[in-house]
Length: 309
Image (cartoon, rainbow, N blue to C red; front, side, top):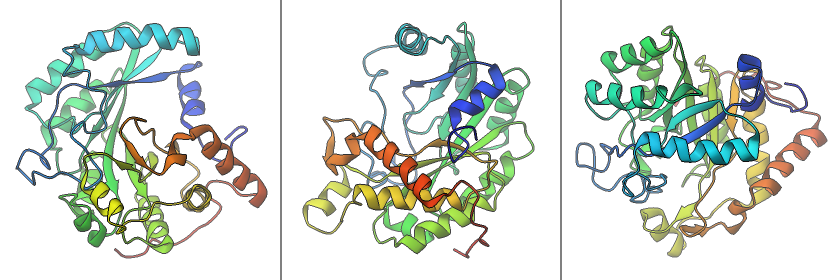
């Protein structure tokens, strides 16, 4: 874990490649079954029409153009050329496998792209998609990132997620032993969830043998159902210290082998409604690290049996 009390992504990349590796976010123009009517048309209550994406696809930028533009900025700022192509916007396995192959091939054909990270939903993978990703894993680093958000079915229903926890379990089971690394996305501060609920999600994820995790703060963005709840005083955002304390407790319950890929999100300033402190990422990370230090704590410190969901 080096100088951090958890196994961070940068250290993991350096252990594999001997240098810094940067993830480049890609908007490939995918849709989502929770928006196009297959599951729902409203989407998750916290997701707006951009799907947390950059909007690059609507600007007419190809995958190659998006990566090449980012390469220049990354090389200048981080002094590295090695990249992971991160298909982020919406559901990046939600297309025929032939189309997926064309898009993934385009990214991997670019010099210095050493792997893929595919953001998707657990209800949008099948054997042909996993076969494709496993084939890439023979020569490249491959991560699939499943949005779970919570291990509690009542919460998944409340946020209009469109799948339950059992669906996530099936996706993980189908992906294991395929040379594909698995990352779970979870959100802290979801409506109706207590501290104990969130820690039970940590316990559930910890028991599944997953390779990595991204921890997100629930923040309110414009044009979402969550914004309506917030403006009508039906949702309270977490305070900064409250969130930092939850992150520490969450990580304490995770296996020390799990890679912590993210400790908080990156809201778009023009879209953000609340909380304002979510834009203070550096301060939030420092607070988390200071709390770990004050507690003399670290990833994996707590060993708790997973609670039923």
